[in-house]
Image (tube, rainbow, N blue to C red; front, side, top):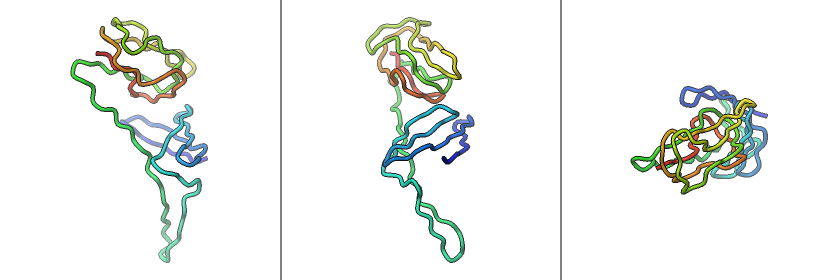
Length: 144
């Protein structure tokens, strides 16, 4: 198991790589399991060569980053307040919602957190499903 300490958008994360198989790595971020997909096959033991000057060179593949396109003007993006697992999705795309209405339930640190709509509108997109692991700040739902 390989452990990394990362700082993303000012937040500290402890990332443990538990297994790598072809293009899929199983990782734990602050104790929450995720599956990460790379753009090409990753070796479990990267090749290491020792040149004459004794420095170490390692071959490492970069993970593919998924970029969410900007939302259309007038839409609201509901983001995860904490890293956790989605336990329930209470709405579906096309549903009309009111401010304060329950959209989903997020389990974080062994507590259930109700994610509510911050505005009136229509659900344009649901970015996650039941059982998905999400990081803090991850896009959950788009409301127009």
